[in-house]
Length: 430
Image 1 (cartoon, helix red, strand yellow):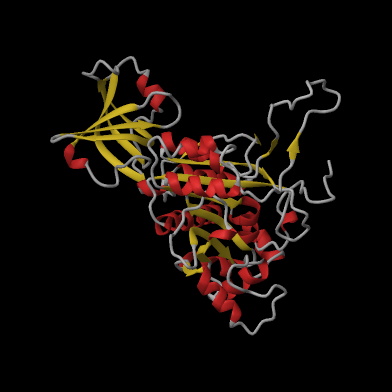
Image 2: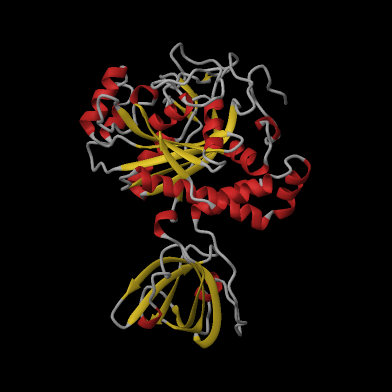
C-alpha cells in the first residue's frame, strides 16, 4: 500500500522537500508545549502544519498543529516574518521562546525567533478534507446501470418491502456524496472501494477497485480542474519514487524494463490538451486499423486512447468537451450547438488509456432540471436538484482508479496483478 499512503498524503497536503535544519535546545510536540507548566522563556523547537494565519500591522499570528493535540499552538511573530509561503497547510519549523500567553484562550504561546518553511503549500492544491462516503447507496452515479444490488440474506426475516424501503447498490462512485460535502468544506476527497458489474475480463477492468475522488467548490474552468489532476499525478508519483525506490525499481527491472525512463518523460513534460473533436479527427486520419471505427458521437475505446497517447509522444493527454449524449446528467452543458458538448475531461496515460475522469458539474438549476426530466430521474434525484436551489456555486471534480495508477507507474500490463484479491466476472476467490 505504499502508493495509497503517498496518494492520501498528496491530497491532504503538498509535497515537501527536506530543508537544512538547526539543532534546537529542546524539541516539543504541540501537546507537550500546550501542557508546559513552566513557560518562562525556555527556547524550544516545534514542527507542524499551519492551520490558520492572521497578519496585523506589527504582529503575525500562526496556529500550528502536528497531530498530537486537538488544539493548535499559537505562534506570535514579528510582521517581518510574513510571507506568501506561510499559508494554510504549509509545514513549518518554529524556534523561539515558550512564554505565558496574555490571551485567555490559551495558557502558553510560542514567541518566534525563527520560522522555517519546510514544505510550501499552494492553496489550490491543498486543504482537502477526507470524507468517508458510503459503500451502500441508492444512487447510480454513472447512470450506466452496471450495479451490484444489495439484499439481505434469505436467512434474515424482513418485511415484504425492501430492507431500506428503496433498492440499494454497492457504490460505483462517491461523487454525489462529495458534492454535498463540498458545500460545507469547499475541497473534499474520498479514497475507498467502488464496484462495477461490467461483464469484462479485460486487462484494465475489475469488479471491485479503489478510487480516489475529489470535489472542489468555486471551480469555474476545466483548466483549473486539469491543473489539480496533473498536480496530483505528478506529486504522488514523485513521492512514491522518493520514498519507495526499491519497490519501484524491482518492478521496473524485472517486469517493465525502460519504464523508469518513460515515467520520467511523463513527469518532466506538461500534459497535453486536445478536444474530443480533435481526437476523433486524429483517429480518422490514423494509418492503424481499429476494431471500433472512430466517429464523432461514439465513445473512445481503449485502442483509441492508447493510440492518442502514442500520437502525442507518450505524454499524458487530456481529452476535453465530450458529446452530451455520452456523459451522465450532472456534467455541465457547454451550450455549443450544433455539436452540443459537456465540460468533461479524461486523462489518458501511456500503457493504460483512461486514468482520470472528471468534469465541471451542472450548477445551474434549470439546466439540471431539464436533464433530469429528459432522463426520467427527477424524483430519484430531487435531493440533488435541491442543492442547486440553496447557495449553489460552480464546482467540479474527478476520479482516479488507484489500480490503474499503479499499472501506469510500475509498467504492469494486467490490472489483476496490482491487487491482492482481484474480483472480476466469473472469479471471486477467497
